[in-house]
Image (cartoon, rainbow, N blue to C red; front, side, top):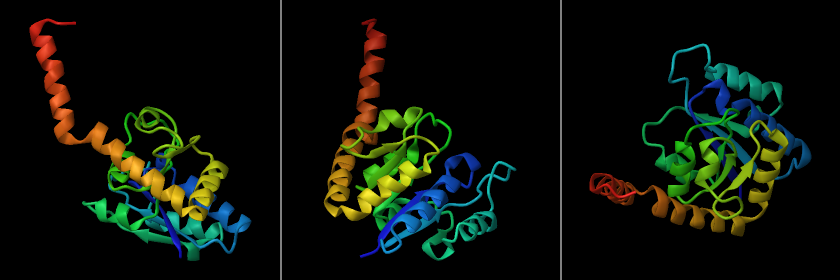
Length: 192
């Protein structure tokens, strides 16, 4: 009966790890009996000062009193099994992204996704149809979205099914290739 919510991302500071931990702490305080387990999946794959270490994120979870509610899973080259193991995938970037690969990958795996609605990520989903959007850095909004999804299995299933259909229709490599070839054909033919 435990709902698994997770952020799958490099440990870049702008990916929203602290927002996720703040949301987890808020949800734990507001609904202590709600069976939600949070996961932080990834690692500091770039060796820069703009990355958290796992120790820093574990300390941040402990400071918020939620160390027992958050699991850490290292970087994995094939994230599809990770997405499928989660009930809710969280995209929590605090800065606008040009695309949002995690969003599309999670959608392709048929998962309910909560998206930081800014930048290119906004163009990937329809709020309430195939994902839920929250403002970037809004821990309260993120907590509310995860709370809603953890209490409503039918909503999770509907969003996940719609997300899968969206991913197949818009982001499938074969379909994308055909559309790209059509554009090239128009350009070569000189058609507007």
